[in-house]
Image 1 (cartoon, rainbow, N blue to C red):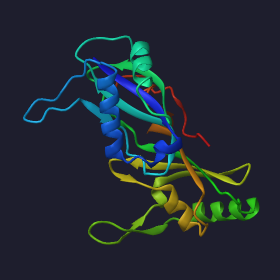
Image 2: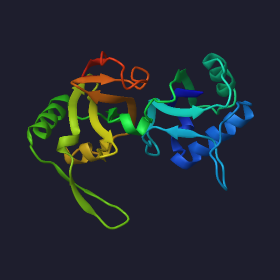
Image 3: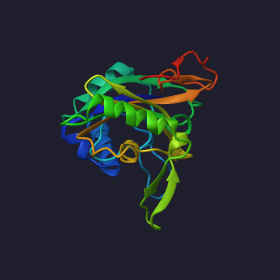
Length: 233
């Protein structure tokens, strides 16, 4: 039985890295007494699959995790048993069953929405001008440090939407796929703005045929693409 878990990440939990989150969820599932399915081989481990990794320090309203069980259980019961074993800052929002043929999260998610805010917000007019200037550019190159040195990347094709909201916050819809990722801090830097005091990942989506589907809306490759128009801003 495969289950998909949607959860939020906030509080002190935002400082947990991806590997720490993996261990935390494994321990919580064992303490909850769930009949976990394990991989085969010399070092078997629970069959878990996360969605796109979240950078340390960023809050999220919608993270996803797939798990596999050896026996069927009511998703509501799984939610209650797991939530009781999780630390503060991690809240399970939804647990639902998916088919064995459902594609992996990393294979379907290709878009992420972010909200960026500052403790001392920029002037809204200046922020709007900077956003319009950014969107008018066909190419926006940023430097991206890596293990093999710094390389230059054009992030403009991966910025699908950028909007200024009340309170001088920025809402972004960015590429987040196996082909490439655009980071909100790169967009902020390219706009010559100071680093934000708060970044929240507000959603993960499957962007397809001009519409956005959430992973809970896209659990089967044949699922009709109803979703919403390609805008969450």
